[in-house]
Length: 271
Length: 157
Image (cartoon, rainbow over all chains, first blue to last red; front, side, top):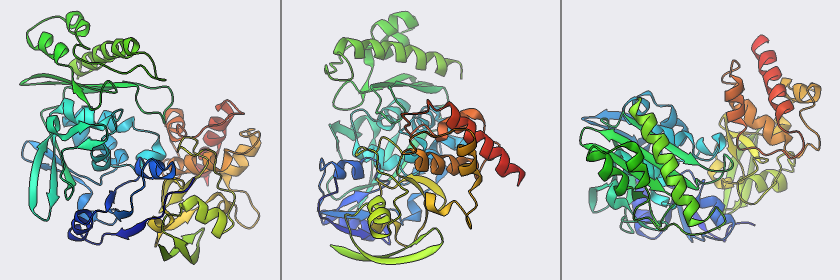
């Protein structure tokens, strides 16, 4: 199929992009989720504003105790960046497993976070790392912590005139890992688990078991109280209610949460 | 809405008026009659439509033609020069890297996206380059062998 009729503009400046978004246009980042959805008519935006020409939204640099990643930085760049690999491994590892290489060449970190698919890897990885996003509108700029970013299926806490411009990754998330299970490279994760062992304790986040990425508080509470990994794994799915669907039963998905949490925690411990 | 775009395809600049909703793959196939780029699925799953955009392998079914305005696109038709097969085409032929051939253009473009930059790519890196491309005939082994052989040939020349 082909997308519904639409009006496309390519933003020459960030201000142009913000004005278009405020006027109702849907931002087009890498388009690796949005364009396929438009093709299937699952999405039919009347207006699109292409962010592909905004060089200021691409790149990775250090800023204090965080790494500042431009929203239009591709998954391939994030996955290969030495600073992210060293300081916030969970995000680089999650980026390395998104779709296939041809998708990672176009797909962006800001696009994935803004799209907020309930099976996406980046929102869970950012949540596990304890990162944040910087969003901009004509009214100014604000920071949204990963815990507050995704609110439901394909829905974030951004206002309708706001755009993610930057992703903030803590440099203290070196001991971290991301483990996922899916059938083919190009499939979404059935379940994915990110783990960060930080100075303030262990954070664990899971994708694929709810309408948004969820903290595995059962696992975190046991580990942060000094309990064993076996005890933590037994509590990994506490409070989660995944759906029975074509990917598997709820019971199977909760089993995956434990298996992948163990795998990611073990890998993070060795880093 | 329509828009006039100029896209350089296989070294030749083409200017055309396109609907803004048109996908790059349909622009290539239907406007430029370059039907070597295939549409194998409708879900960004198969990789058959892989082409190069400014030197990087991408899915032409997941890009609007207007996004390619001002860009350089390379398709499978751009591989052979003066009737001489590109090393990767020759290698697919010699290694039996295809049977029905439907996935082959996408396989070659995806593989070239990696081995042109890294002719010394490991087998693991070759398989990673092809992870988004489905083949229902070969079982992949001969495709990897063909890419390996092409990479070695390209590194020599």
